[in-house]
Length: 291
Ligand code: ADP
Ligand code: MG
Image (cartoon, rainbow, N blue to C red; front, side, top):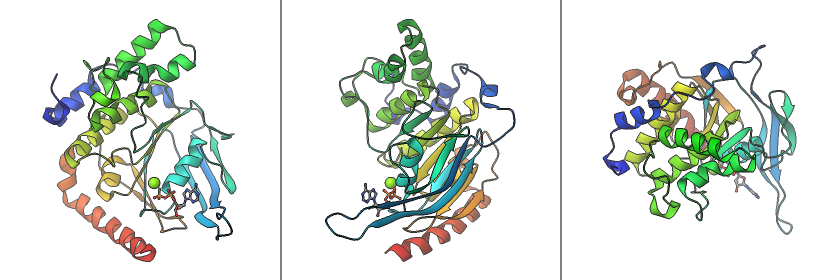
């Protein structure tokens, strides 16, 4: 089994394409076409500690996410991206407003939202396979079925041969692949990723972007992906949502016109550079404001 740094991006794509999708692309199509996720005037103010002033992290923010959307939320550090994502995940509660998933208000964490964080969050005492099966076991799914599902997602993220490895035996990229497989295995309604590749070296990061994009292109997930990396935001998304400096709000939504399947070479195209220049300007203004 080659180490991941020796794997070509093509190899990763092949890995992602190796197994037929479970559920199929049509599974996410819903009659009515309403938004899968609605963020409605969500704001968040954190109470000050011991008499200090409260922190307004997020101004009232609204965002509609449709089925099969791949939306990246781009903003300078500290603008409230993680706060917004944590509220969608049900890990934090908004000060005002609400989040609705398929029309139902979010009241806490749930298996309908799969979360992947920047920091490695695998259970260190469980193997790759056991980590992937964690949510399935909680749901009481039969062991044989768990193994089937795990095998599918191990192949999807290109980790065949590493099923019995423990997290500490894996590179950062492989740990994040396991985390993605674990999130996907629960078949969440929406996948929430908070700078999932932020701790990886540039080469691994680029390969992971391609891997996740290939999974999305094949299985048509609905994705909300937070990043402060402009190139990553453009490459991954069909829509980039740009946030202001703290207190954050959405200042622009930019459609990304590049067709799928999207190849990494699009990053060097003139149209990509134009979009990157435009977003760089937007973010620079915000970074200056917060500096
Ligand atoms: P980002 O993810 O965009 O870098 P965050 O959402 O993590 O930003 O944070 C936005 C702001 O809210 C920051 O000023 C941060 O210090 C503050 N903040 C985040 N979480 C808490 C918390 N639990 N208590 C107090 N302040 C917080
Ligand atoms: Mg953050």
